[in-house]
Image (tube, rainbow, N blue to C red; front, side, top):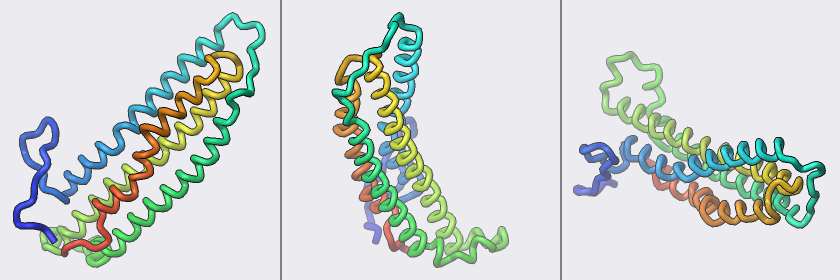
Length: 202
């Protein structure tokens, strides 16, 4: 239930307050959740391309081979399992919301004539549908970017084994991932559940 006086969120660059639990509020919360993933993925992509270019045009006659830091792929395998569990949890939150929200309760609004869009029931249907669409996009970005980073760590590992980077470089990247990014992924289902409650007010 909504309290009579609930705090509002000011979106940066806008003077208009955003009501809690509105689609705009949900979008802002999810933008904040996904920003670190966006930035980290871009940085890893750019960094890899630069290192690969330097390595390809370096003067190494025979790249040094090293197996000292080969467990990055093992860490990647474990993280892929963790990521699959997060993805399943996000899908369950979204499915529960779809089934218990006004998306299902007022599903006939999807086929309603345009004038009926102004009814309270249909406004609720479209509000909840918009909120779910925003969440779908954020979940997709979180999961696909994490998958991309896992693949990039494997590529960084290959560069390290070729002697293109210092020994241990890839594990430092992993340490940053585990400290700063993986906790965000692990908390994502809880955040999504708070923004997509399994039952909403009609």
